[in-house]
Length: 324
Image (cartoon, rainbow, N blue to C red; front, side, top):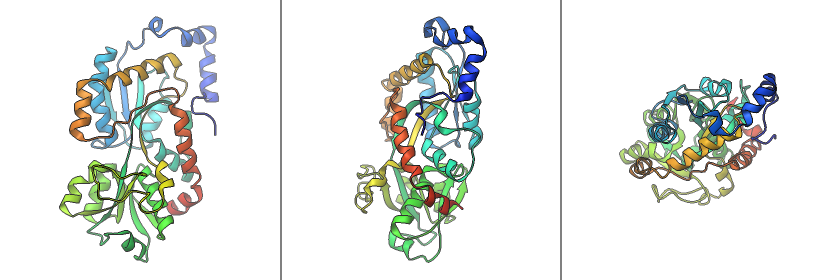
């Protein structure tokens, strides 16, 4: 696989098309380019209420103060949101927040109008633990129930094939049951589908399940991580059920930009996002929401994503079988 920091051929051609002036502009110090001097748009390719949207809307006013320009958030669910960032001018005024794991999964089963590896990956707010649960209304309460169902287990997904859907497929392969997918609008809708019994299992962020667990509408099956999560300390981890190696197949709340974003502008965005983590408003947001906050904004971030992408692609045959 190409390194994520490489330009696409198209991006390189576009950069050279303007001749010497274009090249010079791309390499001038950021201060000389006066970046940012225009509003920045954060495109979220998920519905409102999703963790991606929540993180984006919390960081926007903090970034606005740090960068000195308006920062707005726009929800554009699905491939259209990703494509909007991919096709934007690579000047730093359009960025996105989304999960690349699910996008790599989708690229295995259907062609995409963009290459996931070619985005400029700025970093992440968090790589969050997912919680896979079973729907009480669908008559599922345990791994044993899933294995004994004698029919494909319906797993909630969104945007085509989410990271949680890949996790469902992996769990089914390891524990002996087949998966079919039910598409929804986003993570909150996966949770509601489980409550209604429209799906048998679903895997989204831990906090989205808390109230439904308390009401008895869903039963937690496994925390998708090698270690247990303190928010649901009694729920087994992947290590507890014998498959710790699948912990890399997690969700990343990643920040990305169009292919070909100049390195100096990427650095300004990384520095601002890192500084935002120290803002009292951001700290209160994380603390009050009991949210994951293992942030990383660095040039090396793309290297770690390459490993996650490799883990997903290694399961291409299984993902294709489950999705089709």
